[in-house]
Length: 622
Image (cartoon, rainbow, N blue to C red):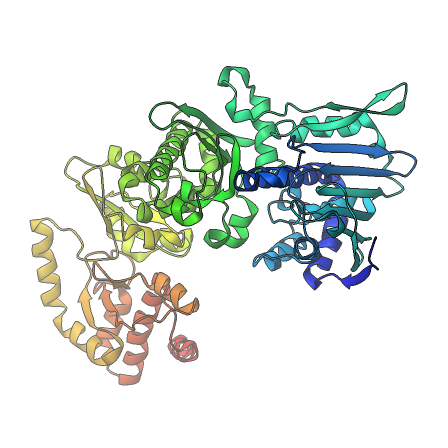
């Protein structure tokens, strides 16, 4: 007996997703079949896992499968699986709401310039709704494994804001999704079209995908398997073509783009396992929008039995962009996330995965520089996190990093630390760099002047992560890394003598500036860094760069206030003017402007922009 249907409204964000999906994927309509088959495969995987502890869930129907059928008269396509199924509450949770903290970012991205980017679908758990791209009504029948026949559920919606829900008798466990096609979608009612899409996107789903046999243009009751129905990673590598690898990646990663590279390995011995790991060519959507908090890990199998979809313990955070599968032979089958985190065998697999990924990136850097450049543009900043997080591989990761340079090509990040060392003079023992919040700010920093004058190369770092990363990268290949804006400028004996003489000659000017600036500065010194500019800020070796401190404050962090040290160039005309100025107000304006222009160049915020403007106007007016 069926209970009376109940009508419910979609959660507001589901309604928005439905609107955007149905209006944005007109050029990728076929995505619906890939997504529905992927969901069906997940349901079969989950039942196979649950049945290890509860064999009775299979209830005499142990051959897990996915059936795709079509009915030209009724204009329907049905994707049916005999997997784990859904209860009434699960139907509401999975189809009536979107339980994702990043849904708002998804909506914003889909409604902006990424409107037609189909790779966003599926990656954000909204793949089911792609059915409404081709259907004006979708009906779902589902019964969870282990529940009685009377607790089947029928869900139905036209995608326009509401759905109906009814309890029905359902003899078969699992889920059937019935798409009632729109008037202009006749192509999807042809067997060859559906089969070609299955071959293209779902051939390596590890469960049989069956279709009815068609004879003499009539659909029969006979079924045939139309996919390879074998786990790709279990095959010998010499039996897998590049096209096979790419097809599997697209199914695995919900991506329309090809993978950039992959590594496929089988380890035999006391601990046997297989890994198939991919580098995407573009950042996965959840990384672009959600970053570290919404990453997905690798798929974990044990003897081809699905264990979990996002085993984050298999790779460190800084490699979260990697997609792939790990299939182990000898991990305990009753694993839970807590046990996984402390399992020694898993730690060995994790170390092997890290090694394989770094090997793969190194091979790209050596043999395929164009692909490496593509990778680095997408994932270079993520990789930098490994400098802080992965001490054991710090040198390997540092070798892969690329930066802009005063001897490079504009803002292009193509100079490695090895390139820099290879160009160093014999007597140079330091890798010099500067950090800023833009390439222009780094390249134009007054702190570079003396280095340029001496022909010393400086790496120009302008990514937000750089200053944080460099706190853990103090040395590379036996060479110290130093910020040109921090500590003392390196001088030979003659230079030191010259600097002492300059300090002595400028003592009256230094005192005047200290008196004029008062509490605004910790100290005023003659600079060895400046050749053209009048002033700059100098930091201690362990002081945070002003641009990073500003960003952290803007992000809501409490940052201790620190007084800057002002370095000056006494030979500059502005300093000569300060030295000669007898009017206290004019001298004060000039002194404060010298400090404020140094702060601006260093990326520090002006504490009182209005006062700065007034001072500038008074000086300009004379």
